[in-house]
Length: 416
Image 1 (cartoon, rainbow, N blue to C red):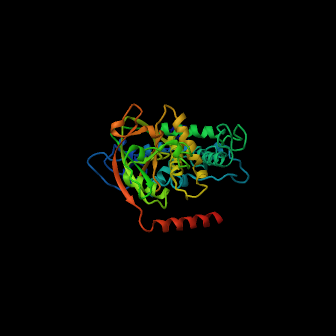
Image 2: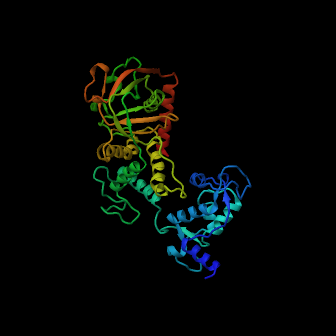
Image 3: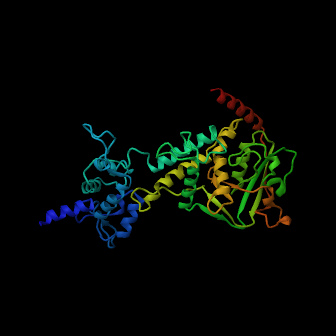
């Protein structure tokens, strides 16, 4: 058997061709996974593309980069013929060639035209199509399932819904549908997979603000802690009317701004400083992990990470305060209740980004007024100890005017 024939058979078996003795330095890649690959496998002291030289190895074999592309692409893309795309004078589904796949579809992980040309030449010359092209991608399936969940619990079912499908039956109508119960389980799985459960340790500070009349003075756990159930008259982002929880933040400014915007027209806002009395497990959605690229060895996490980014934005987005705000809060209230009662291993609360204070993180803890105590009244049920009033802010003169303008704007919004 000739050498050339043997090389062709080897290339066909492994799915890519060797580019020979070529070396690439990290300056020519824009993908973190490829940068790590070059750093780990650096074996040459000169780069074939920029000509840079060094005393220590800093460039890796281009064949390693080609191999990473070859093993990564089939996770989300396959040849149109292999995937079974029908042909009627042309493929009846949108396809892409290898050049566009390696560049545009992957958000340009390579920045050198000669390197791109070498990688494209080494990969199979074919038309590519999204894997399982006739279905939603895994991340799209999760995102559409969340949209269905929101619609169902807001407008169709609110209490007996866990096995209710988007199509109205108790079983999904198609492979891309999920019941609300499956949606909640998927959220939990993604959080566990991304390791987003952390512990609030004793001594950590939290802040809670209350808006009130100007002639009131607040200064105790009873005043500034979680309310009693009888005083929870309205729905909030994470809890329905009648269900008390502790709403707070990690800094005084965020706590104050959340209270100010949620309570327009109040005379004053007082912020209390609390300390964690005992460890509490919380789901931390304040800073979800980055989505790994398709070229990353952790690529299997991409669908859940893409959805987590979307979910974190959804639960924190601001709403206009009016008489129908409770409808918009229903999905997050149900998710919070699921965290409180069904999350594997149990959790005591939830952290999420503030939409009112740049960089702020809100805290929702699942307990009532019994969980907050003054220092001389601590018992085994105490979760937070009230330490002091952190600040008191009086409303400015423009407050009532802003409240009136906001009310007019809300009425105009509802009439549109």
